[in-house]
Image (cartoon, rainbow, N blue to C red; front, side, top):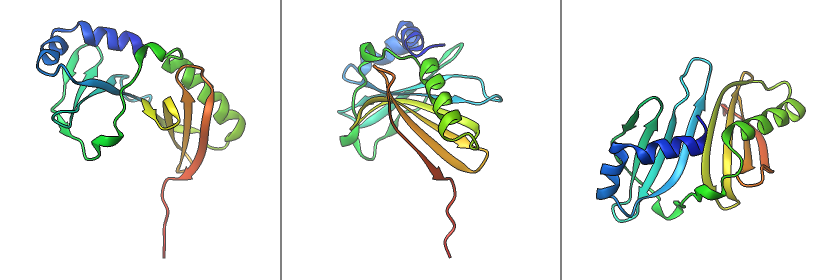
Length: 162
């Protein structure tokens, strides 16, 4: 299920409509997807309530499920997503990331992949993190409007100090 399809399904659901009546000021701030062969794909989307400084998270798969609200520690950094500006869906962003990984980091194959659509200082991005078989993390940020790779880096998953 694509991002916009998932958001549409959520916004049409009774659970979301009932919640939104009580949280009219809440704004969409992220969409998360874990990609793993042994995990069913399900979107988790978060809505920030600035008055209460809480996040309401919905899980979207066959059914819609609302998780308990959680408090935000640093509410000042929360930015609203601009859904109409998402021109590059997750599958295209994932393909772009795959091509970059194969070209720049061929020895670091992904074991698990996490994608989050969020608004950062560099813009609204698909923020992909690969946990690799070499115990590293490959992070790739792709502009959600243009599909341009804005940043990529490979980091140690574990650092051991003496």
